Image (cartoon, rainbow over all chains, first blue to last red):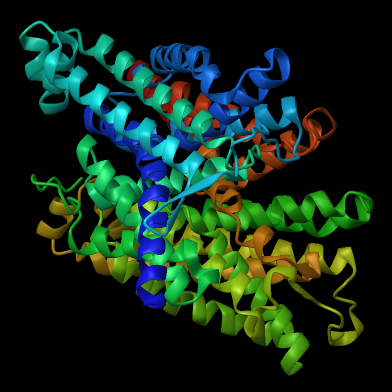
Length: 294
Length: 317
């Protein structure tokens, strides 16, 4: 039965990794759903979150999870400022203008971090970084489990915000029809700022959650995370927050299974191939209902 | 068209004299010429045809690897391997486009990143083919007519020829039927279709031509580098750099990408000591400035002002 054990372990690893991917993906899909902008800087905001944990740890000696208290509000306001001063100006321009603007923001963040912190990888050492525990013979990494719990909490919170509050109603209204939302008195500019702030906040949170597990490097990791976030959101369906969980878990499982049963050096490629297949045959995503070809 | 071709001829003549005047600044001039050529090739698809590709480093890499492997393993001269690379790039672009051109807008851009990343992984992992993650080294090159291809002067003339051929191609295309088809598809695919143009076929042709030209520049780049590492030559950042050079200079203009190359490589050189390896910061800042204030790019904006001045003059009589 060793084969089954390995299979279960692989599935568990895939699902846990997928939780992390989902956390990275939610912010991107939220921003896309409301603003119809693909945020190329999303991964760089994740990296910014990682470096904020490094910074708080170095200056104040804080545990990464404690630094979430400061990093998340800072991320939110950073997002609001970026939206106000840059993205709100290109919202009515051709769609690739917003894409290029976020590409510019991505390059600026990555290289600004490189100038500030230098190129060598940074991390925060915590005692529980490599601790695992086993359930029914399956080993579970502590950090990945915490990240998974963070994802569940965040998605529940987002769900409550979107469905139970007045701001959430306004966000949903703006996502559905911006003009219609304005006609019923919603300040869609304010909603865009809030949504982008939330997106950056989620990215920063993902980065802080990941720092005990991964090393932060300034420029390349950002692009990798952005790509992962795209893959996650497209797998689930762009603009659909709940589907990001499914997309994340699917990506995690596809990568782990592909790596353990086929060629492990192509681990990254399996997710990309799944991404291309979904784009070609089901661009609305696995769980997407509306067919919106952009 | 003749006006532009004469301008190109004058620039070519000036370029021919460059190594004699600035013999110590050849490396930067090679960079400018290669980026001018790549960005102009990119612009065939990205500017004239409106399909923003973020995967053109794949073709640069393809050209460089063909030259290196052809020389190292089969003893083939670079001009043969460059021609082969161009053909393979066109075939690759055909399948790549066939896969992705049903997608529009940002979906197309995203899929180009994914395809380019898969190619990068292949280059890193298939050691028998590409030398793996360590890369390949070009140790010897033939000496046609006794010219040492490792000398910077010879490489400069190759890059100059490359940039000239690419710009001449775009000048001609801008004035023939195919060029008008490209622009029609960019402006509105449905209207273009109504006018009897096949948008997918047009995009495929533009992509194939763009890819073939880019890979020839990639072959020259391989000779210039002499050592080809997959994470450098297949980098997403190189793709981004090529696209931004064209966009900052002015998409869909003949001279825009070349001007972009001069401005960006020049600025990169100026701030090299300030920013060290954080050189792409300039690209980030400039693309924001362009998107926010001069959406047509440098040359596009100048052209617009020039045309407005002409109209103003005509209106005054």
